[in-house]
Structures are given as structure tokens and as C-alpha cells.
Length: 232
Image 1 (cartoon, rainbow, N blue to C red):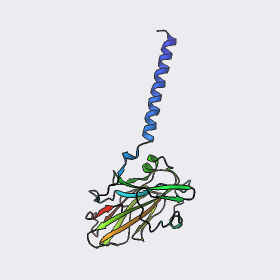
Image 2 (image 1 turned 135 degrees about the vertical axis):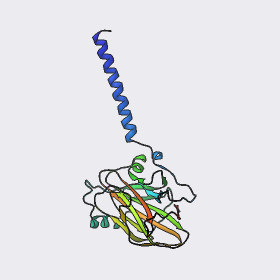
Image 3 (image 1 turned 120 degrees about the vertical axis):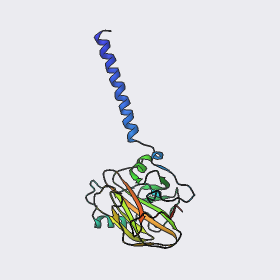
Image 4 (image 1 turned 180 degrees about the vertical axis):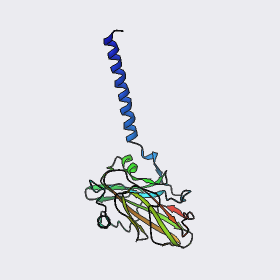
């Protein structure tokens, strides 16, 4: 084999390797929704072994451009979350597949179970081929309690800023540019009432990943597990 043929073969091998590398990068950058979520069933679900809530109704991301996460002060996010993006956003209990209109966007609700303790909003958006940066997510879930539970704290971590409500009352706010950490912020003492309780959350992010985790802790800091979770 002469030098010309050797160089041609080497070039072909390099091109093939680069092609495979590019293919791997593309696959790694575009995971499937099913890698992180499964469709929520009609059966009630329990928290995971650490008490984290994995079943949620997630609204496709609302366009909310921000070039930096440093703007997420308390006052900024309170104003951002007080804005009415869609009708009855603080009272509606959506169904899987329901659609809302936000400006020129037509967005759908998805009832999903996270396969992890945290809910990967970035992967939710990318799996649906929706925008992943400069976004605001609305999330809802339903907690069923066998009895009244007093002096319970909602424990939340989020990337980036977020705000959470229990039965229509503000529970906890996480401001600033932050990464998601378990039990990053705790609410004041709350009461989970017997029967149905509704959690609503809003998570906002500019650049970077988006995710959150939520659980309840009792007075001793022990995760609350004797509850069930549904999306209806």
C-alpha cells in the first residue's frame, strides 16, 4: 500500500470516528422523555423511600427570557409568579392532556411519575423538544392524607428559583441563583388536612439546568410517608 492510500485510509478512519463521536454526543444531548419519566397511572402512589413526591402534573415551559439567574430576587420572582399566564392558574386542577394558551404559546399538561427523587424539568422540556432555557414551569400534585397532620414542614430544593403553595397558601419561596439541594428550604409549620391537599409550584430559570424536589418533614425531621399521591 503506497503512502497515498495509507493517508486516504487514515482520513476515512478519522472521519468515521468523528462521525460516531458526533452521533454519541447527539444521543447524549437528546435523551428520551422515558429515560426520566413514566406516564402517571390512575392508581394512588406513595412517596419514595425518603419521602419525596414523584408524581406531578407538569405544564410545558412558558417562555420567560432571562439571560442570567442573578435577577431572581424575592421581589422579582413574586412579581413573575403573580402574573396571570393562563386562566385560573392558582385554582385549576388540570387533567393530563389539558391545554392552555399563554400569549402565542399553546401548552399542554402532562401527568408524569419521575423515575428519580427529583423532577428533571430540563429533561422534561428537552424530551418534548420544547425550549429549555429562559423558562417558567408550573407544576401541580394532589396529596391524600388519612388524618390531619399538624406541624409539618414542606421541604424543597430547586434549580433555579421557585415558589410553592399548599392549598392556596404560600408555603415557601426559594430566591436567587441556586442549584437543587435536598431540603434546601423549609416552610413554616403547616397542616396537611385529612383528605385532599393540593401543592402548586412555579420554577423559573434562565441558563442552565432546571429541576426540583419536594417532600414533607415532621417535627423530628423525619420524612412523612403515610400519604398517597395522585393527579386528580
